[in-house]
Image (cartoon, rainbow, N blue to C red; front, side, top):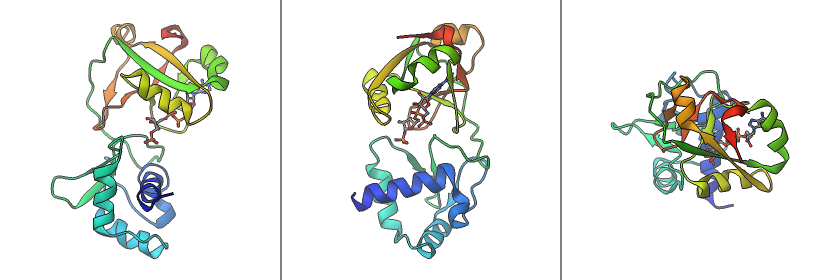
Length: 179
Ligand code: HQG
């Protein structure tokens, strides 16, 4: 694994899931102080400096991380599970159709229960089948669900879009899913 990928995974871990693993604090919007993050990472044996951090942020295929305009703070754009964070995403009207990629072994359960957020704060949906396919492949043979986002929005379900264009919603009941 390259140093860039390794650092990206480390950042996902501490900025989305377990900031306490290195003693890091995140505010409710998910922001960490970059100088503090670097110091704590180094103390825990991860060699990171500002340059490497910037390189990871600039080269993230999914633009997973955002650096604040003043250059002092960093956060993960989405995907959080830690209770410390509750990003105030802006509500946004979704496209008519969105996609969710999963693995074939989850299909039956999803058809029964709908899509649930699980550990994360939201269900993640994408505008492109290709993105959904890549997401599904992480867990096995991919299966794509088509989400009737237009009907969900009409029925009062709220959607958000993260800084890196992932669509988020709290759940998708089975009646809005097709495959
Ligand atoms: C599944 C990546 C059984 C769901 C991606 C998924 C994404 C159910 C898994 C982001 C279920 C959760 C998130 C139900 C949902 N029964 N299984 N009722 N409802 N599931 O990783 O959406 O590379 O927490 O289909 O690009 O796969 O990390 O969510 O397979 O945007 O930046 O439960 O992570 O981004 O898995 O992926 P996850 P996800 P990064």
